[in-house]
Length: 273
Image (cartoon, rainbow, N blue to C red; front, side, top):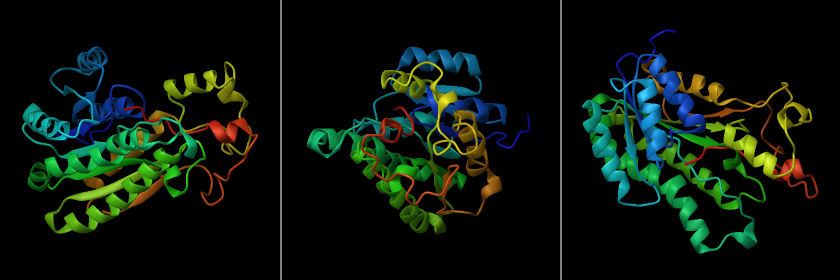
């Protein structure tokens, strides 16, 4: 393995499971020190020990709490003395159609998926200015319109995408870069279990129709982690304000409403908080 991230310090929110966990593993292999974050202390500490306590730290907390961003930022800087990159990966993917989306439901998804990334960038800005660092926001292709049963989630990812472009413009003269990956349907362990609950049956990823996986398989968390290395590294300097789609088909029309098709109505990108 190369050392494309040698000596960089990277905070990854929602990094004890799924895509975030795979990022943490890949980044360490590339020479980085990572600050893990999640709500499950046991899982976080176990991953920290596995990665090595000299190259990882763990912070526990709930990003739905508006006051937590300041604490997480302070703890992240204290862990290794600086922060070179922030990956806003944590997100809630709770399903809900319009009739399910009351104020409380909406506010929680927006709090975690859009407000928390903004507050965390705000709190870490002095550290990122000092390191001439980079923010990588993990979004979703659903930001472009979304699915009927993921209204609030899709709205939150649209807000994240706008924030990425806004802050890239605002922070460029501070030498702080902000980019985003809009991720498509990704086969995490949690996503596999969700689809079992939907009745797709064991081994469902091998039976997906060609319209869902034209290249023969879903995205894997490892694919997202591999792509992320470039964006958190110095290799991507001075690119900022980019929103890159990690998908295997054109977006326009891909998520049209297909009532009665359980696959089209159930699929979503899994990025657990």
